[in-house]
Length: 322
Image (cartoon, rainbow, N blue to C red):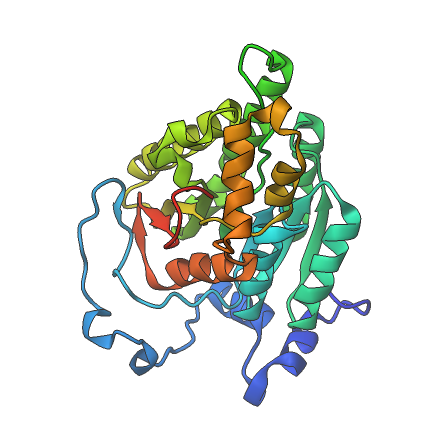
């Protein structure tokens, strides 16, 4: 959020090194049709920085392997109260993006917002239960009223429940999980897409899971596995629809990450959720094969900065679930 005196531009300028304009100034330049120069020599792979490459699904939306400056852009990250979502919001702020952060817990969101603001970026806190369509609609109106066009959307929020044998799972809980993990992603994306299309620039990243490559690896988590498979299908289809529009849509498999979701899975009764599922996550923790949320978020940001392709599934090296 802007400073109390409303002087967002001065605040960002004061926080910027060597007197360079900050995110708010960059956004003003862009809206006035002015472009800030970028030193191409800073590209780590300058030999390939100008090449275009055809992609298998959505196609390219610009040069491949070019560093995208997102300073001055506005991003929305769902599930930003903790874990991968919090780490992603902080990473985006660290490269100059202002961030709207959405999750159920206000206390956790405020902690994320404090970190974002320490980096000189603005943070809009949106306490929202994605299973409640009314709350989702209210937050979307607030985003559009306060921020206007959102340039980057990271649909990260998801739930892993309900767990256990399908014959014993409550169908209502199963449907609610699909609503959070899939329907809410489509609702949020659809609401913010028109602004991206109008400006011919946008980046949508839907967080998936490596389990999509081996759906049988998480027996007892049918709703979660179904949802992640659906998310990748949704992502690739939407990317194909938007080919050539300047808006990219990609899926991100975050790897096996040491998050609260993992800890919750390990705390469940093996007799209730299934011994194989419980053992899988407990063993990963014991063997220290989990990566940190920060490492996963940095991988996401690296793809976001360096790849203009659309219709891809980005992977973090590691075990096949995440």
